[in-house]
Length: 110
Length: 122
Image (cartoon, rainbow over all chains, first blue to last red; front, side):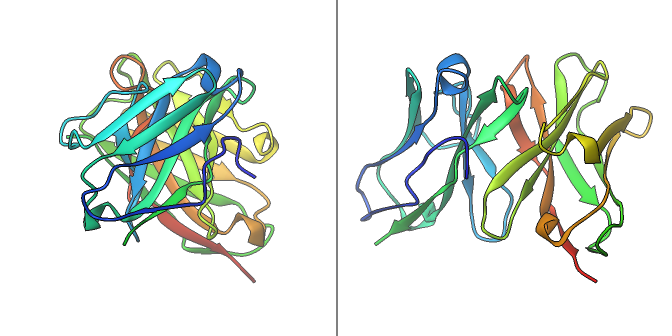
């Protein structure tokens, strides 16, 4: 069972805006940055968002992140078929002294 | 650009020791703020952090696996090695190495290697 809680699945139609939630506690999300990763089938996770809401160069501004208290969210606007992937949140676990991850959300573009 | 590549056996027998190497390019393991993690992903797709070594040789381990793990780095080769003892079929997973930099993208993994699938079976 993963430390951070994400919905197992999400879906949307092309052009739609969707959000994926990530819930934690005061000892992880509540006290550290959150990152988001996209994992396309058969590939490694790819960084989408770091430090809660920062995008690496090359990541479209359709992707945005936010954090409030012990929860975080990833929003994807203008949904496209190529966004169909697994999405993971991560943060620092104080008790672990290392990263903790969500269980992943499988996004389907209908 | 930063790239990482994992290498090691694809098949190990139960009770054997696994040794994985991460070969890094595009950065130096001795640069301040740099960390290199090992993370695995089970067939069910859950991600689990295993170990982390920092530029200053500080090392951290997952408490649940600490007794089985050793992480080391060779800055002359820009490589990080993970050993995991007493392998079990439940350790079957894709193993990734990942780079972090507290000075840029923060403490969490940013760049990931392609991963290497390790199967534990007799």
